[in-house]
Image (cartoon, rainbow, N blue to C red; front, side, top):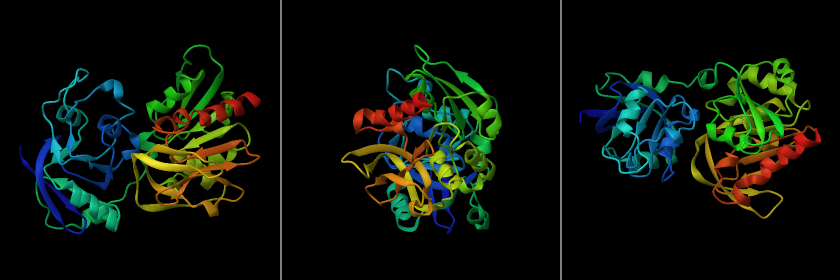
Length: 353
């Protein structure tokens, strides 16, 4: 294996070993604390423009299974302490190195991911560069910003996915960089899902005669998507709306609220979220770097709050037929049968019209 470097924007250099695509990249370095699920993580469009570092020591040990892909891979780079080149799993189709090369993503292993994680937790997310040649200056790394992520992550054409079993409802899902698991969550509940590109007009969405509208998750800064936010503003009150992830954030902005960038975000499968007016705590899957400032959203009621840092995890909009959550409802590992009641609430809203 060839030498490869991870260079932080402050000039700190970590030396490791190369695998994956043979290229240099700059991105926002973030970490995910999930023990398993590197296949799903690497195919989550919400990592667009970012270098994903896995805190679990080894990656690649069970290989790659395309059935587990959750979207199109959009991360800029991948970092792990150890890389397993000989996976062992009866479902394995090929190895991690092949996956990264196929999608033109450089990988780096052999670095101290524990130290890197501690740095990010202490000082916040940083820009970084994966390269095999040390640059003479580092200004380009510090100047990097993630832009136009929704335009890169959204689908290009309208897609219709039939309901499994008898069709009960028609849902229009606005794709800001959605995960396939979200679509499956609705089709398995008797919903025909029409997936539309992020920049579809409110008029065209309503012309599809949906029973309800879903605002998907996705990558990047929610506030930069001004045209998408305006469409959401025009849709509120017309049909039941269920937002999540980036959709949750943009719905809040559309209703007059504000968002802000977090120190290092929530990227894991074990984020505890407590129901504000209940007794349950849900262990949720999340991938985001921005939060909604609850007090800034007029007329909204907070329904979920993060147990670790107190950030907003869900909002309800009384009288608007709309609610949203920051986490992936289909990714809950603990709590009310994987949070079925959120989907049940949305289905009831659609049934009531």
